[in-house]
Length: 207
Image (cartoon, rainbow, N blue to C red; front, side, top):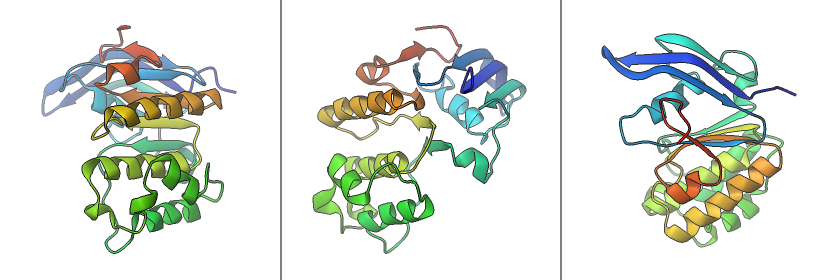
């Protein structure tokens, strides 16, 4: 067992010569939900990209499961990322996208049928994602993210496009995930969603 799932030490990031993050310290313990809150442009998404290994830091150190994040099977076998809307496969239905995710990950956390029901997509299961509404596509993205096995969820504004009722349902799902031993680090503007965990600002100061 790791003392911390995510450890960020003196992280600074400059993009185009402009400081986005400056001397950020953050530790996320196993089973913890941490919500990074703050206005647009404050570095929330950049922090998640650094933890996912998609954005190199200008200075400082980032460790996930005790080692630097790496774009390899070992890392992504434990980490699930929800960022920008994915590039959907042309011609595949919502169900087929989830079946593909389940086929890639043999130890799926739930069946495709269970995911469709949980994310209120049963009636649109045979529609291609681009024929779905914005909220339905976001629920499909969340279904794919939570269907696959993981120990750490990295979520960038998971509430995007969701109605009030499903935002509340998402809070329950993330709380359940953490209760099963998973860890959640998310950037969010939704105060109710943020309230289920510890809140930090992009400067690393508790909010």
